[in-house]
Each structure stands twice: as C-alpha cells, then as structure tokens.
Image (cartoon, rainbow, N blue to C red; front, side, top):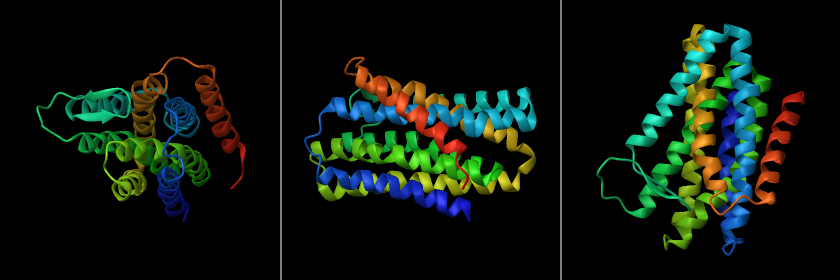
Length: 243
C-alpha cells in the first residue's frame, strides 16, 4: 500500500508544479534557484536519513559503501554519456547527437528523476514509514521542480501543452522507477543494504553535481542558502512523524 501511495505522491507533486507555470510564467530565475536549493536540501538529507544510515545499520559499512560507490559511479557514467540540457547551465554529455533543445531538457529531467524514484522505492522496501516520509518530502520538493521543468520549455516556445506534458512525464518517470526499485529490492531482499546504498549514492551525485550548481548558477544569495536549510529541516521533521 505504501509504495503505491508514495509513487502517486511523486506524480502529483510534479504535476502540481507543472500546472503552476500557468500562473508564474514571469517567475524570476532567482526564485527558481531558491526552489532548487530547497530540493537539494531535501534530497541530501533523505540520502542519509532514509537510505545510507539505515543501510549501515542493516548491513554494515562495507555493503553500504559498495552500494554508494556503485550508485555514484552509475549516475556519473549516465550523465557523461547522454547529452542533456540544464535550464541555466547549458548542455552536457559526450555523445555526438544532434538533438533539439527541448529533447535535451527532457533527457536531463529523466537523468535527474530516476534516482529520486528509485530512492523512494528502495526506502519503502526497507520501511513503509521511511518510504512514505521520503516520498512526501520529495513530492513537496517536486512542486517547485515541476515549475523549473515546465518554465524553460514554455519559454523556448514549446507551447503550454508541451510544457505541462513534459512536467507530467517527469513525475511519471519518478513514479515508475519508485515501483521498479521497490519490486527489485523485494525480489533480491538480501541485497537491500547494497541497494539502499546505491539509491543514496545516486541521489548524492545528482544533488551535488546537478542541483547545487544549478541553484547557485546566478550567484550565492542568502535566499538560496536559506532554501537549502528549509529543505533539510523539512526532511528531518518528516522523518520524525509517525504515518
């Protein structure tokens, strides 16, 4: 039950954020940066409280460290191989593909959202409470992320329908990989500490390499840093709530 609710929350959060483009078309980039730093605070804290630390408790340091290293490395390889676009930082990736800007943004969204979805599924496989707390926190940070996803697409002339559709797609990707992560961990339950480490490592990489540089791309403002603090505190609070 928890995994279905958690996956649904991921889809809803991003969809709500995407629909906000109808009202915030002129949103300043600095406001988006605050939203991204908030998302980074949630993701960084969830990596440890819902995945890495429980993995250490369940399987010890070495299994967890193996999973973290693999997750970190896999996301680094994926990001390196597949060309993608950031809303403010430009294009990355080495494959010589001629892709339209909107397509590059969609690929970037996919790379970003896969570890978030996997982390919710893996956390839920370990504990329904931890999974729901992680899903709720990521769903809340998906609201500004949905706006961050849809605004550039609309600004690039993709049209409102395209902007909303891509925003919904990003949430659906998260929900799908949440289910896949949960099923995989239930089938291979003995590898749960490694899997939890993998999810944590993947999310750490995305947070440090993608989210924080994007959030501070326009300069290190106090509001951006405050957004990070709010994200950290929110995740810590949700970890203490009984579901």
